[in-house]
Image (cartoon, rainbow, N blue to C red; front, top):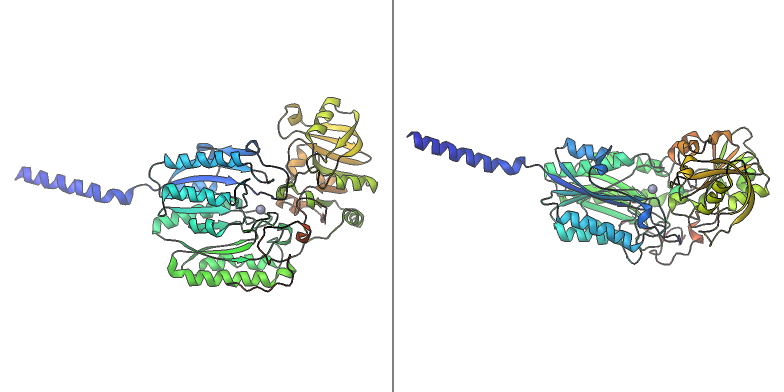
Length: 502
Ligand SMILES: [Zn+2]
């Protein structure tokens, strides 16, 4: 009798152990990312060395999205996360190296429940029609269609129909200038964690709006888009709907998929009508307000903007050199605004900055306090720019220049105009960028930056902002760019077109 009881108890324990195991098994999510905004008009190829690449534990450091997974009790398997400053299309070998490493990691990861993609959405690679879709299709080839894939994107991404077919959950920034990068990624993680927990089978509905709009005309802090983006939280409160995203799209990409889009994600297909209705409703509002999407600050030619800055006698005026906006992929070595400032005999002016590693070397060689002659800029952008001959006094050489890091910079002065010469392509987007070269932007009458809209920190401190409509790879007038591949008709290339969201 005793032996029978022991046998029964052992059997019961074994049964409980096996029957409970699947429910308590920790979910596993693999993460990856290739974030790049690729300007197809730019002649500047983005190379593997331009990417900052993180792997393993470094990926998870100080990341809100990683905390979301941890809090949900999900095991994270981080693979390669690569990010590069916006530039021309990405070198084929760079993309293939990244892709192959990611695919191999997935093959070796063991059982997976989900995948999180940390993307920008405007990646374009030489020789590929749509590299983002190649990547996600190869992932699907390994993991199959049952594993949930969630992605976070910059709202300046362009996602093709084939890419969307292969992803389950999409969310994008809700602010431009961007203030919600960390929150967006955390939302993509939360959606995936919730979908795994509750067993959702997410369903995406979307509308493509045939519009090419630069970020400077689709700022979410001002009308007409402010009120449209403000409706997103209410959409997500609708029964069965998880998320909504409005992609302003990336306009400096001459690709069939370049357009605005509204995405609405539902918990499952039962809510597809509600999702579609919301996507159509928001798309219609955007289309109806297309003529109102204009620059939110005064704009004009360089000469007009320099003259206009004189109206603001006691305020610092920021002027964007918008055609050579390095945050949208331009080379950053065009000197047309510097040339104009010198012609205007403008004083107390800062140009931040001109990318020219050769000129920086000459400054370092001459040394602080020395006067030199140089041919500045116009070496990479030879389409819209040419070098400018200047006599300059070297005022400052940054410690980074001495250490030969990529942040190397020098400040030179020519007839009352200070110019920051920088080693690698970047923009001055934060106060700290100015501090690094010993300057306070608010000490100047005019500050020229290689941007379109000002990034949040500068936007918050700039007393006045003007946009100079300079020529370059990021020209703000879409109609002046040589589009060949973008889907037509498309606003504003075809101003009289008629369209209805379907
Ligand atoms: Zn963006």
